[in-house]
Length: 115
Image (tube, rainbow, N blue to C red; front, side, top):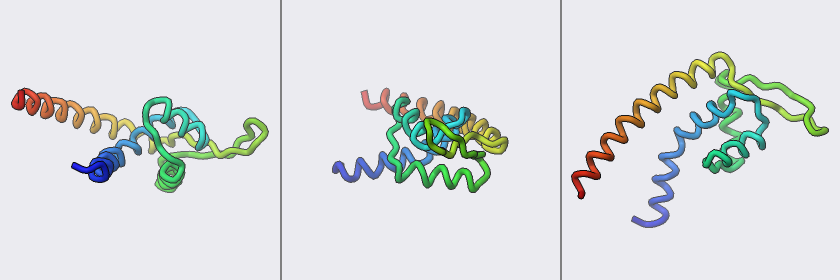
């Protein structure tokens, strides 16, 4: 498999996970850069061109609340989970854990078969 093909597959794998990671990170209020930094510190590298449109889309879907705050001498828009976002995060977390358990089982079985 070529590097380009592998990169494409990695991107597909990450797409859905990014929504879950952003929602989970926004249990606490963040502005764009602080959110990006938290995700990076957690091992999820996300560029601004992906993060900011995702935040806007989640806010438009009423999954995030936002407010302007003065911080470090600048006005910044802070985002945090809305009530609806909190409910969705709980549902997606359950779904993720179920999928992760099933996938771990499939991968373990596949690994044993190839050994």
